[in-house]
Amino acid sequence: MIRFLLNEQSIESALPSGSTVLDFIRTHQRLPGTKIGCREGDCGACTILVGEWVNEELRYQTMTSCLMPLGNAAGKHIVTVEGLNMRSLSPVQQAMVDQNGTQCGFCTPGFIMSLTGFLLEPGSGDHEKAIASIDGNICRCTGYKSIERAAALIVEMARARPAKGHLDWLVQHQFIPEYFLKIPARLTLLEKDLNSQMPLVRGEMMIGGGTDLVVQKHLAVKNASLDHVYDTSSLQEIALENGRVRIGASVTVTRFAGSPVLQDHFPDLARYIKLISSTPIRNMATLAGNLVNASPIGDMTVFLLALDASILMNDGKQKREIKLRDFYLAYKKMDKRQGEWVEAILFEPPGENRRFHFEKVSKRTHLDIASVNSACLVQLADDGSIREIHLSAGGVAPYPKYLAQTAAFLSGKKPAGPVLEEAIRIMNSEVAPISDARGTKEYKRLLLRQLFLAHMIKLAAAETSVHEILFA
Ligand SMILES: Cc1cc2nc3c(=O)[nH]c(=O)nc-3n(C[C@H](O)[C@H](O)[C@H](O)COP(=O)(O)OP(=O)(O)OC[C@H]3O[C@@H](n4cnc5c(N)ncnc54)[C@H](O)[C@@H]3O)c2cc1C
Ligand code: FES
Ligand code: FES
Image (cartoon, rainbow, N blue to C red):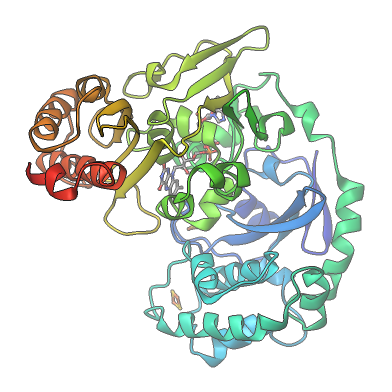
């Protein structure tokens, strides 16, 4: 039985845990406000709010219900647009009407959920955050300007919202219905021991957020017996241990980005993470899902490869630690033994002398996978020569690539003109891009070159001038 709250209602469902929340809402609960657009996480028409306890605080996040397995709803508060409706329009709904933010109306519930989600976030919200909250919603009619105006109006209206106790304030000002005030107590009663689900490989298929698996194998997921690891608390930690960062396999991209431990070590983290998918997808996507999906352009994989990360594998009886760079063997083929799962990811964090940089080029900024992505970690000696370097690239090989030969060549050398040209030649011999919808193979080689030079300018320009890097 999967038990959760849907709007004001208590739910107990015996449906397969791999059915989607979207189908449950529309077909089984007959709540048609949540729309079906792409069923691939791309359009945001199916956006819902998902409330759960995080550090003893009830937090709401947007998710795409078309990719969310019903089993991942267990113990949570699922909110659809019907669950926001009151006798009159909420100020968010009214702002969309007043600014002509809705035309055919198909995308509107999704936008309403995302903008209400923005208000439910603790802390102060500015215009930039309001716009970021709708980065996963697509509208074919309005051209977005009217929606942006509605967002601006909502930010203005919410200025008085207190940082703490904002749930009461939002109810008082009729942004959300009154029943929200009873949700914390009801969720506490519902709370189940999610820890008991894992770590034991019992089902045929392990599932994290489902953002890869449900897109690729929708029917297989629905019919399989699943191990839901998204909520397994032993796979959730982010900690510094003996000089290394240890990240649990089920940490989501959003949690990764919000971690103070990681923000300390990656000053540009927010900028990098904005390049990855969209807010609702990042709220669902786990790091292990990104690694095991083994996509040649996996952003977090390329990020972690350049940190020379290791992964801790567990089969229930024994654990082994392997380098991520040794994990990938061929297209979608990994050094993952029968019954093994990823338990944690470990790496030595960058610091003052070990600098890190990530770059991604895609056809559009949000909700697009990379044509080419790349990351680099460099430690320079006092004379500006390279003491240690790790380089990775995606979109240029059948699997995410650790550029071992290029790194070996660069070690001990000053990153300037001819050295870099030779490094680029070696780099080209290490990769084998193919032409596809994201660019020709020649274009991808050119992108890799440019991203490599961008790393060098960003990481070494204090010691070696940009002129020397490019032209010496
Ligand atoms: C609209 C959209 C946009 C996207 N944009 C991007 C993007 O910009 N960049 C990017 O890199 N990716 C992107 N993705 C891909 C996807 O979101 C990521 O790869 C994500 O990290 C997958 O995580 P998940 O938890 O959802 O994986 P799931 O779908 O749950 O699982 C993926 C694979 O990992 C396995 N798995 C999960 N957890 C474990 C574990 N602990 N041990 C062993 N195996 C495990 C599963 O069995 C499955 O084989 C996008 C996806 C969508 C739908
Ligand atoms: S239907 Fe398009 S994101 Fe879910
Ligand atoms: S109003 Fe028609 S898709 Fe947005």
